[in-house]
Each structure stands twice: as structure tokens, then as C-alpha cells.
Amino acid sequence: MRKQTVSLCATYTLALLVALAGSMKATGLRHGFNSNSSRIFNIISFGAVGNGIEDDSQAIVSAWRAACAVPRATLLVPSDFRFLVSPLTLQGPCNSKLVLQIEGTILAALTTRNSLKSNIFQWLNFKWLNSFTIQGSGIVDGQWSQFRTLSLIHQNSTIPPAALRPTVVRFYSSYNILVHDIQIVDSPQCHLKFDSCRWIRVKNVTIFSPEVTPNTDGIHLQNTRDVEIRKSNIGCGDDCISIQTGCSNIHIKNINCNPGHGISIGGLGRGDSLACVSNVVVDSVNVQNALSGVRIKTWQGGIGTVKNITFTNIKVSNVKTPIMIDQFYCDQSSCHNKTDAVSISDITYQGITGTYSYEPIRFACSDSVPCTGLNLMNVHLIPVNWWQYKRKAFCWKSYGAAWGPVEPLSAGCLERSNNRLIKILTKPHNYTC
Image (cartoon, rainbow, N blue to C red; front, side, top):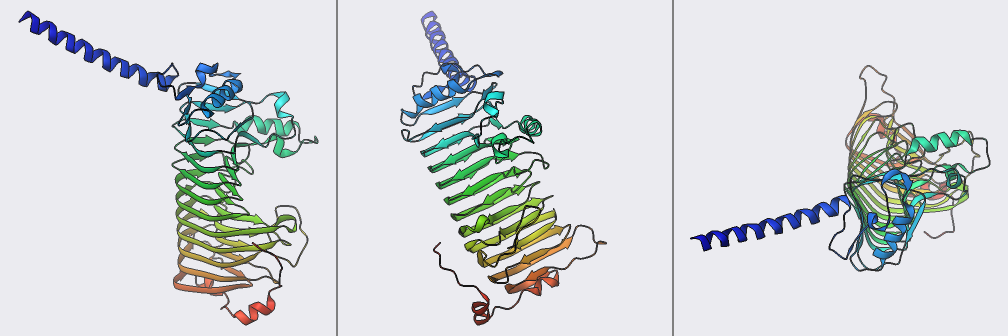
């Protein structure tokens, strides 16, 4: 009997030790103690302090270099710490399937020396990566308020404004990138930018900055193809999602945008440049308290094409202008009139419903390059307050048709397509998109 009791005690003790070891390992991964895994590179182990005061940039760079050399490695930013970071470029190529696991908080550091450089256009700059993931429950904080103060101090200097207000997270020339679950907040400029990238997935992210912050796009795409953005909450002082030239095969679904300027393509063609955007699908988006719902904006003088764009199941609430095409876009005090324009064709709006605070629809298209193939289907837009005057939809040089129930009826201002007439009106161009 005694022998059996000793055996049971030994078994219980062994089970307890195994459970305790597992608990310590999990706690170590979360809080930054050493882990037995040779593929987890904790920035604490490379000298990061995480007190929100001392600069931890060098520790992150050292940990990155070590993790970059190991297949399937994880670079860990542990929870319950605040890591102050100066502008960094973390670049590849790295071994396959590198993961940046953000559980704590990364803070943009502001120092006099760094803030007065002329080329700080991004804070965390990722370059030349393949099969890379950013994930976790942590936060990347751009600390917008301190950059606003610095901009006011140097508003009469020769320092470019972009140098004082960098993008927080930027990817350049990277492929097969996944960003999910993290928060990016209070960026001085764009929150998350992809430039010259391909095969991008963004899901379940939270992006937020105050409505009064200028040029703080949520997600910004340029020269980037094959993108999926879904199930995310974005609020900012500019476009929730901005799609620029060189973008194609973009799929956006299940996004909440509040506040902001909605989902935007452009502005395109600035400085008489060539701009090309095609094959964009925006589906199941809620836009609230915004300047626009879904819009396309181009500068006079530009050339190129915007084509095959679909906006479907868009719900708007208290949005100034829910549907907009503006080929006379100008964000300056004045712009010169020019005859060239980026061509806009085959744009579908289906299931756009909700309330507007100024006008329901605005199609302001070029005299020389009219908009063609515009389709409105099942659109129902009403003013925020019923006692307000129902402002009519505006159409200029816009060709297409309205199908099914459409409210307001003025949306029927679209001109029926006359291909021969449009061909005569349209100025020919020699360019390739």
C-alpha cells in the first residue's frame, strides 16, 4: 500500500513539474524571458529595455539580423513593455517565413537630431522581403501629437513637411506579405503603406488617428498588385484606403471606415504624369462621418486609365458625398485648366445605401476625356435630415445608365452612352498602361 502511494505521489509531482514548465515557457514568450526555442528572437535578449524612455532601436536591429538568418524564425516584441524606436530600415532578403510578433507597444521616438533630417519619410521601413508576416495583439504608436508640435515649431523653415511627419509602417519591393491583428495608431502621416509590392494580405487590423490629422491615410497602396484587405477597422484624417497609380487586382471587403475620407482611388495624374489603375473590387464597406464614401479623383493634365472598378454593398452614414468622380481634383488654392485627363471607364456602383450631408452623387468629368461605362444599380441615398433640401445629383460629361430602384431620381442625370459621339469628343493619347 505504501509503495503504491509513493508511486502516485511521484506521478503527480512529475505532472505538476511538466505543467509548470509549460506555463513558464508560455509566460516567457509573452513577457520576454528566455525561451527554449532557438527560433524565437526576443528583443529583450538583445538589450532592449522597454521603459518607453531609452531608445531600443539598436536592440531591434540586432535581433532582426539574427532572426533574418534563421528559417521560420520569430522576432518577438513582448507584451507589457513600451519600446521607443527611432527610424529603422529592416531589410531582407531573409530566410523563409520570418514573423514579427508584436505583443507590446512600439513608440515612434522623437529626437532633435533625427527629427531635423530631411529624409525621414517612414518610421519602420521594411524592404526586399518575401513570405513575411507581422502579427500580434500589440500596438505601433506614431505619437502624432509630438510631430504636430515639431511641425508648428519649424513651419517657417526649409525642412520639407514630409520629413517632419513620416509614415509609420512602410513596405517596399516586398512579396507575399501578411499583416494581421495588430493596431497602428496616431501616425504623423500614412499608417500602413505598400510601395512596389505584390501578393499582399491585410486582415483584422485596427488603424486610428484623430479626424483633425491631415494626410493620415489608413492604408496606402502604390505600384502594388494582387492585394486583399478585409475585416479591419480604420479611422483617420484622410482616406481610409488610398489606391494610387500602378495598382491592379485589389480586393477590399468588410471594412469599417469612421471617420475619414472614405475609399479613394487617386489623386492620379499629378504633374501631367501617367497613371494606371485597374481591376478593383470594394465590397461590404461601412463608411461613417466621412468626407466621401467611394471616390475617384484625378488631376487635370494627367494621362492614363482607371477601369474595371466595382463598388458594391456600401453603407454610408452622415457622409458628405457618398459617390464621387472628380477629374478636376485640386488640393491647392488654384490649379490651371488643362485638356488632358486620366480616362475613367467601366465603373459600377451597386447597392450603395445610406445618408448624405451635402449631395448624394457627383460625377465631374473631363470635357476632352469623358467618363464612360458608369453604372448605378440599386442606389438609395437620402439626406441626413429629412427636412433638409434634397440636393440633386451632379453629372457632367458622364456617360452610363441607372438600373433598378435609384434614389434620388436625379441620379438619372447620367447621359446614355453614344460610342460614336464619345469617340469624337475624346482626345486621343499615345500611352501604354
